[in-house]
Length: 113
Image (cartoon, rainbow, N blue to C red):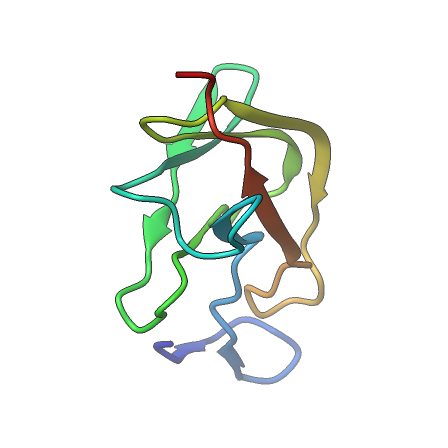
């Protein structure tokens, strides 16, 4: 995580660089990462964003969503049913770039062969 000095607050502060979403993706039966790459995105109205897979995690963790709003989360992966969850709120917390974090574990269900 990168820290950034922000001026203009009542005193200078360090932006926490928090994410509105931290999404872990696993297979619903094995509780292991799905085969292949998942596509994880959020949307709110005309805005959409693909979350970024973090390379340091053995289990796929996707992060993003550094803005306020009410979002819909979508996760797709080959061989699995699409996952959709709506009404996820992200709001600013404080004056230094921090957001509440939606920590979600998505358990993907395999598609019928």
